[in-house]
Length: 212
Image (tube, rainbow, N blue to C red):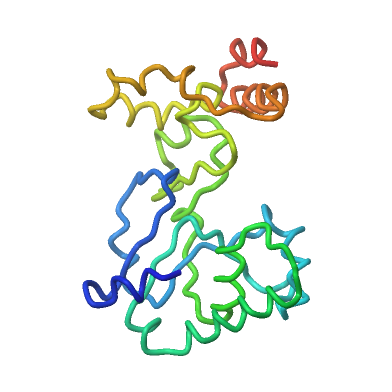
């Protein structure tokens, strides 16, 4: 949220990407709006309803903050930071626990000031057949590997991520030992079942049965 204030003197716009976002196509046309994000219609819907205490209606568009394009000039010359500070204070006084603090505060503060982008710029539903991303019939520009299990974990294997990983200078190094970099989860059985479902959708039924 401090990106415009820090980088405003360097660039008019800044594209922020989470570290689990992979670029699959041309994104040059992004750099023409004030604040750009992709509306999320299903994943956070149940939680969004709880934000009505801050004036955020269930019908208001809500975005995932993993892909954001900031118009630094607009942020620094408008009342954006004043509104943001007011929302932070409001949340503190209410003692309401935000599930996604930065994401929720951005949605509350930037309501009505966001340029909406197609889902192809933040494809978060990555648990499907890898062939769909390989052929990319929907022209997906940015795929976002959300969730506790990432494609660099042993249980999070994804063929598209792996194809990029194999081309990286780190492939033959330490990171090649995927089983050694899995994070400890409180419920490993649940993670294996999630991996099995993902493998089924990717068409790898044999490995899916082993994990399930």
